[in-house]
Image (cartoon, rainbow, N blue to C red; front, side):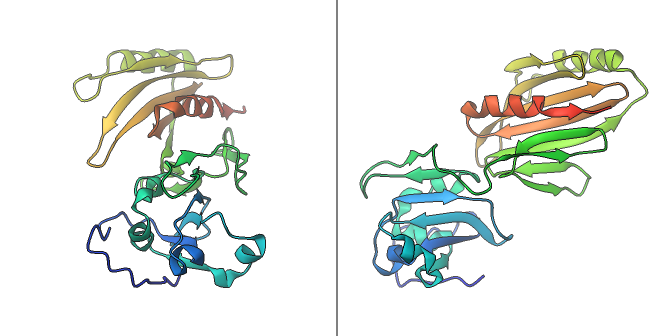
Length: 255
């Protein structure tokens, strides 16, 4: 992926320490004509060095954007030197869409823009377990075998355990762990029980902080006879609690 450079030599923030999110596909109106962006979205990236961000002024015609010569690939620091107001937005996850009315307006979140990969799919976890999840999530397997889905600001880790116990005994065991967990590192904010006739589901919500941010975390257990899926749902915004719960419920077991 070839990056374009600009001659912008601002002595203010050069954003050299901005996280390495990958290349941004940007309308050359922004760089060549110094027109600030007014619309951007982050789609599922085409390759590992791609951030997924597509950034426009809002003045481009369809003919203009259809010409690949009018789109350049730039680093985040290059675009942030042109418009520092994007600093927080560029850290938002896949599926994010933002717009503003003019150069001096606040950015606002767009909810009615259709992204190409924004649809639900069913992923087979094992022969018996499956999950229904948005196709925007990128899937990978970590070194320890944990299955990982992420958009950047929402993530899921799944581990599957086998046991000799039936689901009633497993449920009581995990229920005791949830109710008696150590509160010194992170306080339990909410407990959940979404059990149904097929799967027992129990878990809890906490808040954690790393060196960069504070985020919400649901630890959930989906239980059937002799099998447990442990899931960790990470999400930056409290408004995504419903997403975490609905995705958890969409982990199903087919005997």
